[in-house]
Image (cartoon, rainbow, N blue to C red; front, side, top):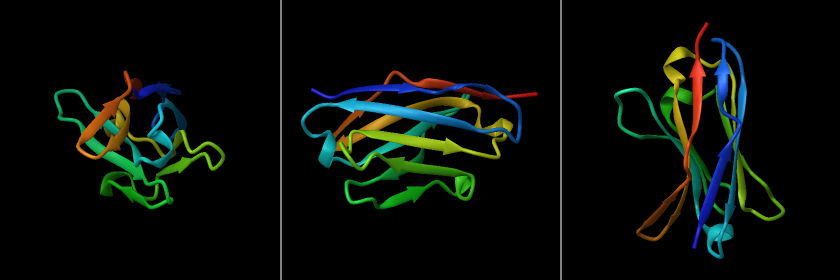
Length: 116
């Protein structure tokens, strides 16, 4: 069983920064790719960034150069999303994801609102 808990969301002004944290538990987590997705108002869920067990990283074009995903090297069960230069269009619920084969596991989500 995989359990994911996100934290770190909130309200921030345009140009500001936030850091999201995802803590994962479960036997397969250490070896599984993990990532962040988001769902904006009236939008479908979309990929933000992913990171593999070996540290391979992928970003959505819309966040390249502004967001940084990382993974703890000790346990390999926590990931982080450093979000800088935030824009109003980054407003969304952000979800942590673990993918294992054909299975996707999701956290409950954390709200990020970028507004002046």
